[in-house]
Length: 325
Image 1 (cartoon, rainbow, N blue to C red):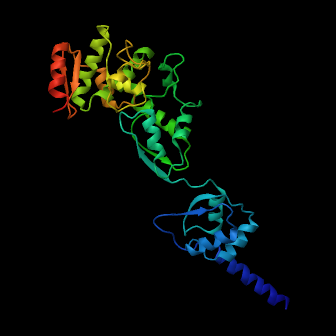
Image 2 (image 1 turned 90 degrees about the horizontal axis):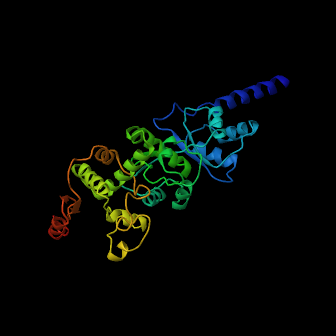
Image 3 (image 1 turned 135 degrees about the horizontal axis):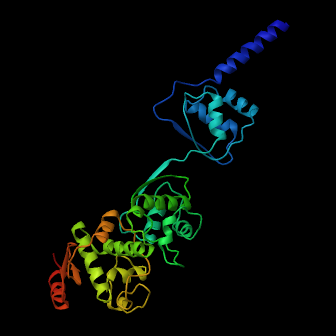
């Protein structure tokens, strides 16, 4: 009798070992299993068996209890080629975060970036979350030292690009990734002088807002430089509208009279910060401006700029091009 019991026990043990082996040879793409809040081991084991990831829900559940598994809600990536012990290691490790892609176009402001990220499917980051992260500390970004004392704005430093981030990323982590992209793309091209570097970044952001075509980048840069050299107000609508949190909107006469630090009709010099996120091409136009005597330009309805030296010619061009190509 003892021998029979021993044989039965041995058979059960061997059978159990077999049931805890990999269910299959695996698939080309792993399966992401979501553990829901409050889900029990038995429920999870049944789900794993139904998905073909384990051989036996009964034996897996019993084995998991022996191992003392504690389930945590989230997604976990596994494959049918995994034995029960490997699946348990996955369940005990960090949850799987699926990649999420979003695009930040050149010329986006902080507000527009925040809205784009909040609208990105798969990311659990609200606009308020992102804007709050911009005020936090702990970023690795030594190039931020080019800002004047007291300036804490990250406008202009959030590099426009296509980003791939884990869906579990925090707003702080997303901002750090954008700053890292600035470090790798824009920062190496800026002058060594902090003041000059920040002025160039501000100018590049103005060019980004004022020129649609690459051929215009160095020409707009020349207008900005010429007006600054002549101690003329820049009188650029995009700067004014940024200060009113209305970037991209046409400026009205009433807007022109509202005195903010960004009103380039009422305040001399460059605005206090960049007004958007410039790209590499616009920075290139800033660093290599055209040599001209232009002091004015008007943008036609097709996005092409027309330049002039005198205000009289400028007014003529406004009448000629503002509503047409």
